[in-house]
Each structure stands twice: as structure tokens, then as C-alpha cells.
Amino acid sequence: MSVTIGKKSVGEKVFDAANILFLTFFAITAVYPFVNILSISFSTPAAANAYGLKLIPKEFSIEGYKEVFANRYIWTGYANTIFRTAVGTFLNVVFTVLCAYPLSKRYLPNRNFYTSLIVFTMFFSGGLIPNYLLIKELGLLDNRLSLILPGLVAPFTMVIVRNFFMSLPEEIEESAKIDGAQDLRVLFSIVLPVSAPIIATISLWYAVAHWNAWFDSLLYMQTPDKMVLQTVLRKIVIEGSSQFQNFDTYDPANYNAPSPDIIKAATIMVATTPILFVYPFIQKYFVKGVLVGSLKG
Amino acid sequence: MAETAIPTSANRKKAPNRIMTWLRLYKKHRYLLLMLLPPILYFLLFRYVPMYGVILAFKNYRFLDGIFGSAWNGLDNFHTLFNGRDFPRAFRNTIILSTLKLIFGFPAPIILALLLNELRIIVFKRIVQTVSYLPHFLSWVVLAGVFMEIFSPTRGIVNYVIQWFGGEPIFFFGDRDWFRTLLVSTEVWKTVGWGSIIYLAALSGIDPSLYEAAVVDGANRWRQVWHITLPAMMPVITIMFILAVGGIINDDFDQVFNFYNPAVYEVGDVLSTYTYRLGITEMKYALATASGLFVNVIAFALIILTNKITKRFSDYGIW
Image (cartoon, rainbow over the protein chains, first blue to last red):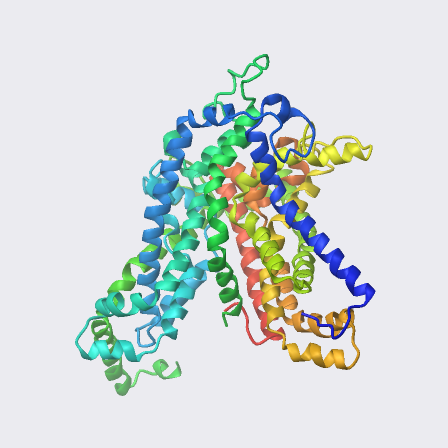
């Protein structure tokens, strides 16, 4: 950052003040949309339909949330999302480590061939329809496994883990090998314990990706009960699907009944709150990923 | 390998030996290889089988015949796409939107990083940074829902401001004249904070003594930014720009798919959303495969090209 020695000039003072003002405005534009939705979700229809800043609900009401929590698809959506995030992330990490560890060994036969085989998939893919037809042919349509299996290993993440393994000193493994430990035991009792930070980091990457994923569920799931939360959210908020949220019973004459917009806002809040609370604490692990990725030679 | 061209007795002896060595190596490292087997099988099944599936792009797909039984039809599918109305439109929209996003979205994180870098109050800087990362952690489904309120013609804040200045309310999500503006501005809004990380990292690597030396030479803060900060950022900016141009064929499916509707297909339908409708909604598998392959081949060529160029500009490429 640029420095000043001695007193700041008038121009500098003006710039510093304007900079703080601008960045404050910028930060507000980043959070305001969510404050707005939060406010609407707790409003009565009359307050929600009025123009205004809507920072706090003018007339407080929790009718929208009552409606959302009475919707069974919110619950099945949550259950499916938690399932795919938990099981999916676990399998992601297992397969990524199983892939990265052997490839980190310079003496692995045909190492370059296997590495290129995997890295190539970062740059070229079959595309939407061939992937869809594969899932269909495998009989995985409408099966929750189709949310987990197709993305088992992210090549980019695998390369980062492999590089981490390569950076570990070889001595610790050699000493174990002399003691007669097999590769698998070396991995589990020596390499993994010292790799806890990277394992935690990639777990978070995979977990957030699972939590936010919606397209695969939209594509592969047919039974509404099997759809993940983000897909249910899309069905209600974007498509306005009556199958997922019945808006027909809304009676504008009833002052207290929540309007579709309030229900939509409450649905967004219910689906988004976990990540809003968690992200400030986990963002540093993701920042690391951006930097590692950019430094990769 | 020229030596294999002429089979001499020495070579004939060598070949089985090579296989023996190979087998011995594989036996020696069998546990490592066994570990690698499940991931490799995964890649073959879920990544390479679909790649083989692109042959569908050159076939006349019929449900009864299946992928392998269907007859070849050469480049007919591509002819159909290019001579249709929607594919060229989607292609045009993709390029226009990518270019607009590049023009407005590329400088934004650089400017944000420069402004953050000039902040003296570190706590404030941290708060602004953390807040700016928020949109990165949310899906476009959530963001589309949120923006439908913000840009609502009857009660959204944006139209409130427009009317306050005496303008007419605009239906951003359904207005052909405004839909691209909506896509570009929300994209910039979502990516600016996260995009600034890489530039801030470049800034934190600048030697502070450079600034001190500049002050001694009488440079004010503007001069310091111009002569020290910006030159230090140039390598990163160059690489990021080349990569961004290389990604020009890649549209943002998640965003467009959650924002658009038939009223704005004319200006907002992009290649990925068109491919989706063609394949999944209309079940024209062969045409949709061809459309996807067209994009993937161009994207792949651009990646090879940009990697060559970045290697020329710096010591490191993408791989």
C-alpha cells in the first residue's frame, strides 16, 4: 500500500474519506439484497407490497414461515441435501486421496499416463446429453447416487492434494517402509495425520459444492421427494410450481395470509440461512484454493 | 523409436524383457496401483464414456436403435443447427454477453483491490472483504430469487429509485432492452469480491521499501499507485485477461437458466441453455450433443491457445 510521510495533504484526506464512503456503499450493496429478502419474509402482504427500502419489516408477521415449514418438500429437500453433502463429501475425499496419493509417488509405473488421463478431463468433456444418457443407461435416474457418483473426483482438487503429498518429506515414509508397513498403512497412519489441514480444506470445497448444487437434481430426479433443497427452492421461487407450493389458496382479502412473494422470501431465507452463518468462518479455506490454483506451475 | 523399425535379434530379445520389467514394476507397486484403480475406473466410466458418447453428434439418433445402432449421418446435425434460427441466435448471444461481461467484469475486481489496498483501517478492510465474498457462496437459484425482488417493477428498490428520479418502472427480467444489462450487472456484483482475491495477493507481495523509496523521491500516493502498484500487478492482470478472453465461448448456464424466460430468449438465450432445451425438453439428443460438442471443441482449442500465450508472457501456464 502506498505510504505518506508527515502530514496528509488535503487531496489525500478527501480521497481516503471518499474511498471509505465508496467501499461502505459497496459493502451495503453486497448485503442489502439479503436484508431486503429477510425483511419481506417477516412482513405482512401490505408491507411487502409497498415500495421502500425494507430494512426492517414495518408490520411483523411469521405467517410466511409457518407456510414454509408446513411444506413437506422443504423437509425432504433438507434431508436430501444433508444426505448428499455428508455421504457425497465423504466419498469425494476418499476417492480424491486414493487418486492423489499414488500419483504423488515419482516411482509409480506409468505415472504420467495416469495423470494426463485425469487432467485431460479438466479441459474436455462429453457434454450434457452424453452424461445424461450415461446416467440413464446405468439406471441411475431418480436414484440419489446420481447426485454423488458423477462428480466423485474433481481433477483440480486432486492435483492440489497430489502436490501437497509431494511436498511432504520422503523420510517419514521411508522410515515406515523400513519397518515393513505397506503403502496403505503408510497412507493411513503416517501421511493422512499430517495432511489434516488439506483434507479439511478440500472437504469444505466439496461440501459447499454439494450444498449449492441443484442442476443434477433437476436433471436426474423425477420424484419430488428426492429433490435437493436448492432444486425445491428453484421449483418454488423461479418456476412457481404449484406441485411444490400451493399458492392457489392465497386469499388477498385475508389481511394476514402470506402472499406468494412472502412465502418465496421465507423459502429463500430457510434455504440460505445455514450458509450465511457458516461462510464467514470457512471463507479463508476457499481463499487458499484461489491462491494455490493460481500459483500452480 | 527408430530401433523398432528393423527387427534385429537383439531387439527381439529386448521386447519380452521390457514386458517383464513392466510386470515386475507393477507387482512391486501393486498396493499403490490398487489404490489408484477405483479412481481410474471412475474417470473411465463417468468422464471418458460420455466423451465417447459424442459420436451421437454424427448420428441420426432413434430411440429404438440406441446410440450404437443409430445410423451415421455425417455433419447433418451441424448443418441443421447452423441453418436453424435458434442456434445462431444462441451463439450470438453467448459472444455478446461474454464480451460485455469481460468489458465490465474484468476491470471491476482490479479497481476493488486497488481501493481496498489504499485503506488504512485494517479491520474495515477485512469486513468489506468478507462481505464481498458472500455472493460467491450462494447459488444462482438463491440469487435469482433475491434479484427478482430487488428488480421487481412494482416494489423493488431499483425501480423505486428510478421512479424517485422521475423515470418509468422497468421490468428487467422480461424486457429485451434491459435483460442483458441485468445479466451483466448481477454477474459483476457476484464475482467482483471473489475476483479481487488474486489481485490483493499480488499487491501484498510488493516490497514496502519500494514505496518508501518513492516517497523519498517525492512521489505522492497517486504517483506511487501509478509507478509501483500497477506495474507490480501487470503480470497477474495480463494472465487473467488472457484466460478471460479464452473463456469467451463459456456462458454462465446457472445464471441465465435461472434468470431467463421465453420473453427474453431473443437476447438472453445462450448456447448452454439452448442445448439444455434442445436435449432435455425436446429430447433431440443427437442435435443437442452436436451443439454441446461444438462448444466443447471451441473451448478446448481456446484453452490450448491461451495456455501457449500465457507461457510466452510468463514463466508459468495453466499446466
